[in-house]
Image 1 (cartoon, one colour):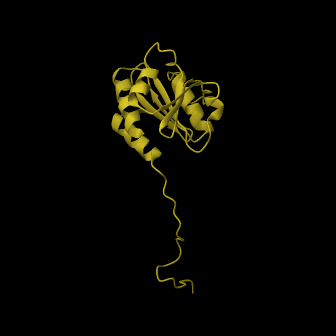
Image 2 (spheres, one colour):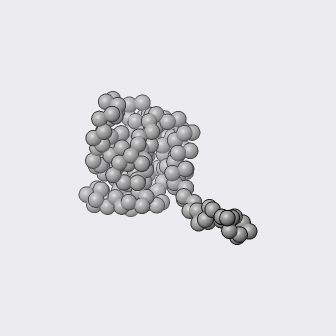
Length: 163
């Protein structure tokens, strides 16, 4: 999925087309999906580019991705009330931070004004990333987290080291 997203983001950045792409993880985003325009299509860079094309009916809202599908478009998110946010950041960035504050979703923003890339996750907005930083963050956030099952304090021979 990250390959298609990156292809679309590179195109959107180059053409200074604003976008808000939200990737659902563990926490359900159903309350945002219900009122939005359903898409239910396989994730593709062409479709993302089309949705955000200026003056297209759905370009102002966000897109929600579930797995490798675009679930809906034209999504309106609650905006962050964080008063420390740069006043020059628009509604898209505030919406991205808003969803990252209330869920574990990953929110990707392309600025309409300057094509800058930002990622909001875990209640923080990482602003003005390079394409490489953006790609690395996306891959890192979307890769499965490794679970650690072993007990750290047992040595390999299984002997009790506590005297």
